[in-house]
Length: 252
Image (cartoon, rainbow, N blue to C red):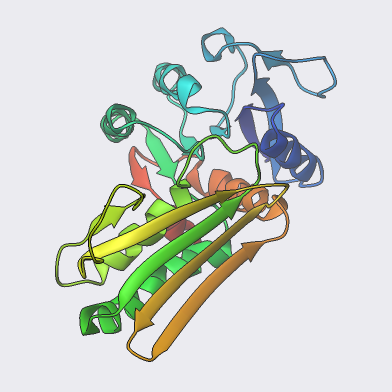
């Protein structure tokens, strides 16, 4: 039986990509969408607000925006629906609410749904345990299209978190050096953001040592890779007990 899915942010770019992918997948079906803007072109009913959804489902995929997440989680708890939470740019207060809500329903939260990026998380933890602990400076540069509103990207922050997991000392994230008139602190991880054109997503991590530089890079050529990951996550999460999950649970 197909997994019945509610697509939050259904008329956004990712929502439409996922809708197209699900239409070709017999194991999952979008039964409703949530989006404040709708012209009736979808094959499923679309509700302007999460609280108005009156369709039975097994799971929610969320690719909306940070402002819509709180209401979505409230609806998910009321309907006892697990949520694949892909929206980034959440505040600290919202992140705390996500963790608290996971005590009631299953939530799979990932800054990036790509299999390649989630493999990169594991590689960076290993690289940091060797190179970072040997004193190499670590820098992250992320590039996205000019319509992306949050910076740095959630993926860049997750990459930095993966680096910290492999480090024995504590490190600080530095996002801007324009007001700093000092040498680079050895216990910092620099994170820079580029916004331009139609770049789908690029993330580069540099380990800069004396006389050598190691670079690890991931490039997304299509948003479809994120849609495929979200669908795999939805199939995995349907029916799961409450708690926090991530893509490492999906890929094993």
